[in-house]
Image (cartoon, rainbow, N blue to C red; front, side, top):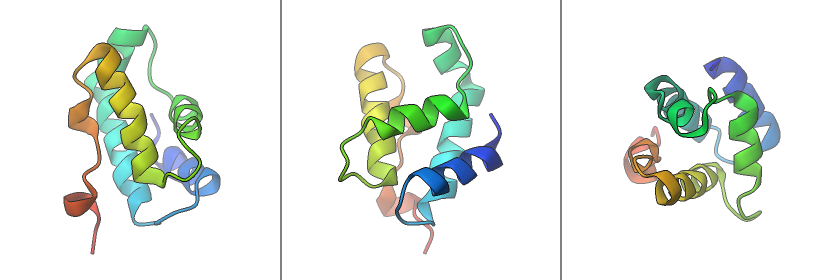
Length: 94
């Protein structure tokens, strides 16, 4: 997964704290590199997958909330995804 492409798509698609874009992109890249998504779903995680799934989250959610919402669903259905969530209290740069 191209992290720069993902960052660009996240900025263009979702309004919110620009400081969170690289944090979410880093977690998505880590998820992609872990191969867990590919193992569970039979295909590599793409930028389009991330954008499409984050767009399904409730409209009033910010970027980190959208990411965590999706990961929560993945964790419930397949397990092992919570480790990729974004903790805003420690992950957000000052």
